[in-house]
Amino acid sequence: MTGRLPPWLSRGIALALLALFLGGAATAVYVPLFGAYDAAAERLQEARDRLARYRRIAASAERIEQQAAAARAARAQSGIFLVGDTDALAAAALQNT
Image (cartoon, rainbow, N blue to C red; front, side, top):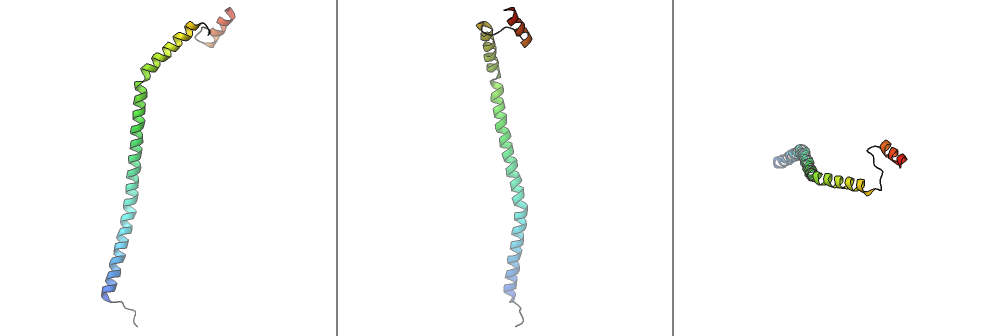
């Protein structure tokens, strides 16, 4: 026995090995490429979501400023808290009282 394969079988094995090599090469190139694309798409979507949240916060800033001004005015008129812009002025008002 010489160990030689028939020509059709050796060609079939060669084609199978070529297909396996090409499939492995394509996988080695496309998988990281598509993985990077998916990661970039996910980061882009997260950035868009963050931007939408920031825009909602910016839109509500005026309303929050109005509420804070109303709370400061209510605190000043309540008479419960010491009057003074700083701690030192409030302490002086306490001493005067």
